[in-house]
Amino acid sequence: MDWQGQKLSEMLMQIMLLVSAVVAFVAGYVMSSFQNMLIIYAASVGITMLTTVPDWPFFNRNPLQWLDPKEAEIHGVRVQKPKPQPQNTSKKSSKASKK
Image 1 (cartoon, rainbow, N blue to C red):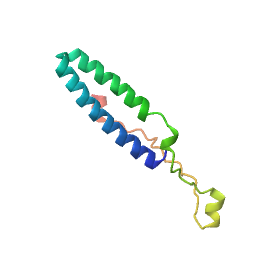
Image 2: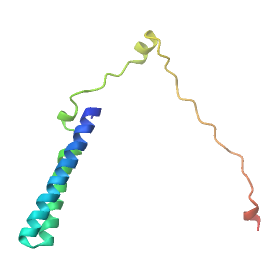
Image 3: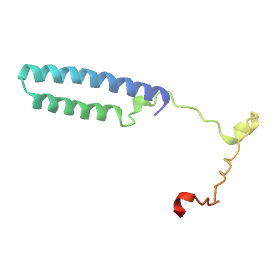
Image 4: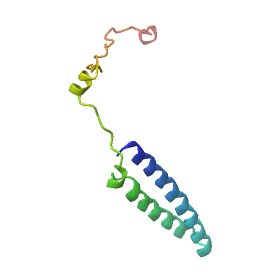
């Protein structure tokens, strides 16, 4: 999923959840049933998840073009390997543990 696809997915999720909350509330109010309202909202949350969570092809319309490391060297970009982080192996004795 590219950056624009993530933005689209989040926007769809917010709109769908807001609309489904309003629809569920109105339906629950008209039916005078809190249980039906929760069932309708839960079903619409499931539909929203099926729509926005998977990486559907329409979320990949603007893929990023990564630069190959050999191409980067040609263009003067230095590619460095990550340096290992030093680990603190010294053990400090605390006065509280000796009490």
